[in-house]
Length: 322
Image (cartoon, rainbow, N blue to C red; front, side, top):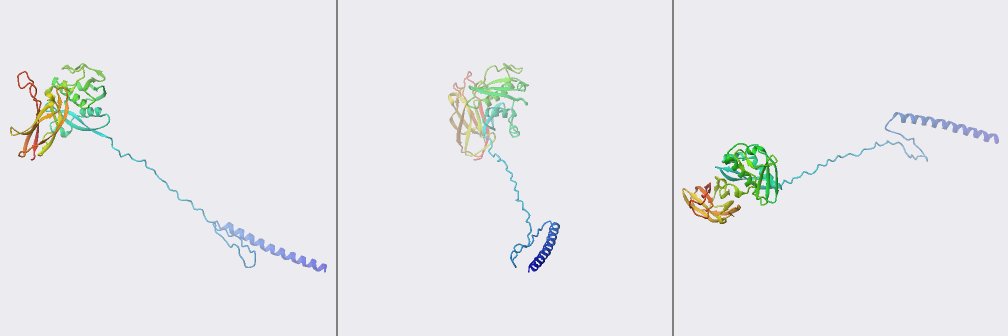
């Protein structure tokens, strides 16, 4: 009996050894197959119970990279336009001061006005008869405003060329342009950063501040009409604006056609002698269509005697459309 048990055990061990040798070959075959396939990794089948398969094979998924979104941020563009101020520049037509308009950025409107004056009339304004007596090439070196005084520093070109009338005209242009603002009563001239006593070879005195009242009336007249513009068309009702410095601050505006007065308005109020002030009035006219003239002047306080200053009229030609 004992020999029989030993024999059975030896037989059982031999059988187990054979099974183990068969499983090792299968395992070796499986490893070889894995090394030859880079993408699919079969996993050996495991059987826990007869007829039940736990895992047959699987494929290793490739990782998916998330999409990268690039966002470009554009800085906001400022659409706010600089604030512009309507200012006046003073040129000449037929040796009399006239007004032109410009738009300049604030708040340095005094500097802007003088800069525009030195640029001179536009091509359209020149075609309409406007000129500047300020020599070409004159530069504004500096301007300061304090206590009602505008100190204007100009380049040396300002005193070049011309006689006494030319010197007085260019001075008048600067004085009127600078003193259009309430904060500026007068202008003091400098050249190349230095105070001056006389301008040019004609010896025009400039050692003191000059106000509008110092400008010769033959250049300024007593009334400067701003609108309507020279040679403009006007209807039966139109507005007249400008500046005046007249006796007792009152003067007439007349409308003439073919040598006869056909309308007008009186009195119109502006500045009294020594003080220029703005005015605005509306005129209604009933007349045939055609060319007319707008006439404004200081009637004076002493009549027409030989000792009285001459009456200087400002005349603006217009076309009345009816």
